[in-house]
Image 1 (spheres, rainbow, N blue to C red):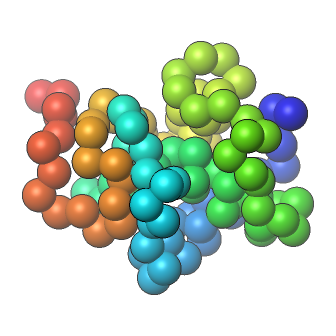
Image 2 (image 1 turned 135 degrees about the vertical axis):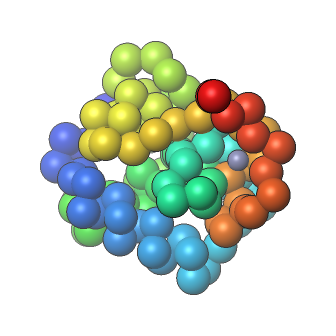
Length: 105
Ligand SMILES: [Zn+2]
């Protein structure tokens, strides 16, 4: 399954707010990438899973789509919705403030 095109930026923003409140489960942390939004980091795949609730009325399971930067995967999808993905190993913990970020200058 590919990531549903019906997931819009507004759905993703709602997911980020929810993750701010509920946090990120240990096993849903990211390994290599973070979605960076207003200085906070989120795991890209988990964000899409949660955003799906507002679009197709259910959470996407991690095995239903792929993470990473290949076409059709989580990173380009989120970038197409206007979000920034960076390489980072913090795991995307919500509200992470002192990240060892490889920020581009
Ligand atoms: Zn991070």
